[in-house]
Length: 436
Ligand SMILES: Cc1ncc(COP(=O)(O)O)c(C=O)c1O
Image (cartoon, rainbow, N blue to C red):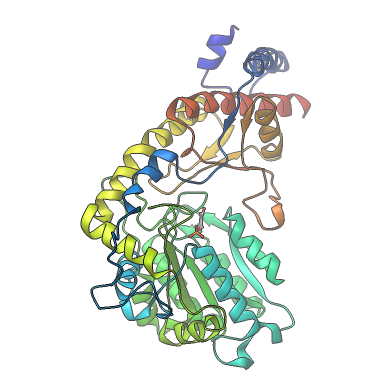
């Protein structure tokens, strides 16, 4: 078999292949891999951050105020005060998170900071009075749908919160597993959720899942909090995006308003290091949060908040702006997906979800191969996020999951990197089949 028709060979059916056939594939793929290595590539699919082109869409923020620092409601943003953020920025957060303005806080540049603060406050000071502080519990556990976002897991590790995994399905977390875990383990006090274009699977939680999550507070009790990290709320790639169910309203219906805290930011909307972060929570949660942060700060950067508000009022609507982001990154996602389709749609060497938004595509190798694939790709000049990073404690028990982040490289670079990626998956899979 020649190299070129091997690349075109979509079947690579390892289960029915003879030893001779596997050896032929191994020889051809090893040669293909050596040719790739000889190119001395230096490509990177690790970074879930906006490309320079995307960042440039918001350069109009610079100079936006032009000496006018006062908000419509008369707040001089240069001065101290306004702990909860300016009203106009909170309105923007309310629009993104679909929650009432009175329940929204607008903060500094990072939603991860807000999540950390909220977990810290719940742990040390309690969100239902001092007696509710998680530190009084013998053990505190968070449910972590996997694969998930590594920095959520780091927050738990840093605060000494135990983590228990639940599987992700194409509709969101496996809710039977979630409810069963909560019923059987009273140490469960929280759960991480990325409900829209989940990091890394790209899954959008279905309505029924959102409704069931809103009801968890009735099973888990008053001291349980879902951290609803809606980081990709408006990051659609398709023109007809799926609409995520409204968790705030579902909680009102279920009488569980205190059980869910929502987060978002403009990190992947404007400038990732200089955006505005938002939190939406019940009156009681918000009051506890504001009381605790009043010891940490006199108020957020209101001038940056005003810059953002004016930019989206005067230069570009939020909706239009996100369409420009989609136009830049959609071809990169399409390139990843077309490589995966071509290489793996007719065999069982890998599985993936085709994301309609967000920043990632998640790929599952055959069991036991993710680390090997990442290492092979790294040696051939294509950096991938370390295998295991999408699981608590860096431990993917099946060693299958790899997160692909295609936004930073150009489309041509994504194309080249994916050629390498599929070759590495094929080579690792054939070698595993030969060894078994
Ligand atoms: C799910 C998720 N939440 C939060 C963040 C970070 O958000 P921020 O920049 O607002 O701290 C990221 C960044 O990759 C993310 O993927």
